[in-house]
Image (tube, rainbow, N blue to C red; front, side, top):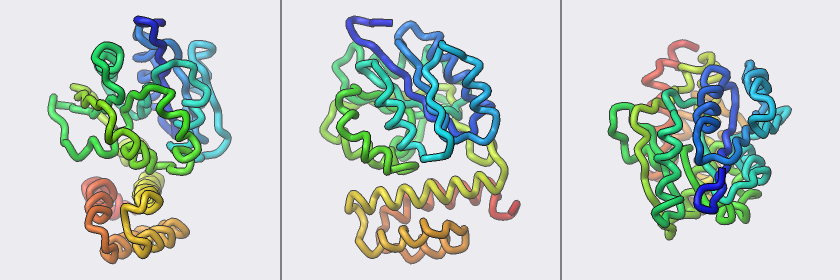
Length: 267
């Protein structure tokens, strides 16, 4: 729907999210602010594709035969979108509703904001550190289009890349009250969850290296880990990094979750 002359496209990347993606899509379809829903199936191996095909022509479905990574999926979806505004949303959220869609879009539609960052807040509060990697984002599409090639290469580090685009923009933070983001071990097998945590950590490190936020030495260490993402090597590699910033990120978003989920002991 056209709201005050502005059209909105939801862009949803999907990788093995058969349990949650349908409700995410329904939330966007149930919103009078959204013009189209673009869903990119990024090589899912579960029933995600069958779930998506069940929506028929109500969504614009792009099916990638193999997994290319989140950044690639977002780039492909943004290129195919036709709205002036794009909403990026992860497909593993629980309790996401049309009210949350409105909360995300209101600042950019009515308050002169250029970028919106949404962060899940199950109990009404959210940890500030989680803003750094949140996948819930709203942008003017024309600001994103020049960056699609770089987004595609960033894979799971795409949020790191996007963060560098909006430092000088008008940004609004929106808490998504009641929304829960499922942990990887709650969605997938222990082996797949572990693999994806490691891939995410390595992609984040590689993206920081491309942006020259970390030293060339640390960047080469991450590249070596990327060639063979093994837990033991990853833990050792994190300890050997010189960049305290990168260490903190990998400990918080990878090693901490591995410890909390007891994935290491289950393998």
